[in-house]
Image (tube, rainbow, N blue to C red; front, side, top):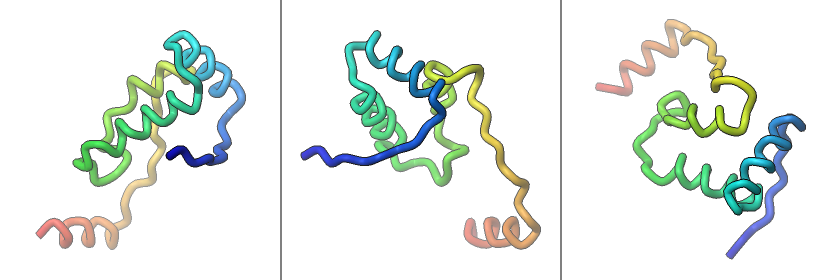
Length: 85
């Protein structure tokens, strides 16, 4: 059963994504669904930085994928390593 969801993206990204989806014989909704299935299907990634989607993102975005993250604080690092024990 399909469910509707509303998402917001940069207009240029949407345009390129629609063009790409059309070239693959897909709707933008189905392309998004396929990408999300790929991300959640394995269950082996602890966070978004471990998901190998850079190639997919660069297909529909301008330039290579770029993840901007802040360094972990000492407290966050300590918790991370404590949780790994």
